[in-house]
Image 1 (cartoon, rainbow, N blue to C red):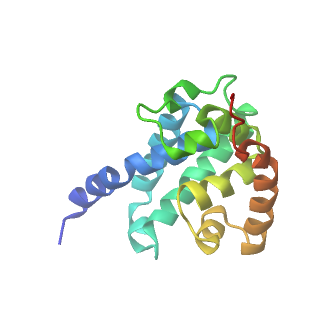
Image 2 (cartoon, rainbow, N blue to C red):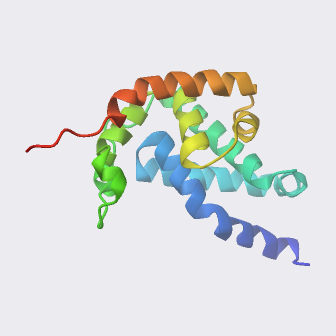
Length: 166
């Protein structure tokens, strides 16, 4: 078994990319996302024994990330004035390009209230179940369902197929 000083760096390396993606989808700014992930890992290190004992380490660390995002939101009153949507451009178009422009979808996602945005990101972009999402957000599964429903309703206008220009 690995020693504690080896376990933490391996843990960080295995989860950094996923957490960064989640943070970016929550806040829409790569620099802020990096700061949130860094703070998350600082707190995870500070409470490393608790993380190790958690039933689901991924959910535990994502909860830290969502809490850090919420703290930032409360402290600074929202998101940066710009969203780094240029980073969403894809070199090879995929089928989703036929349905929605990625930059438009990110703008719509960032327009959602924070709890709705978090449920959509965790449920659909990170693939968590309602139970896992509820654990991360520290709320009931019913709250996850209602917040998700409201968010999807708000996003529905962006999910209509683009009209062809024939």
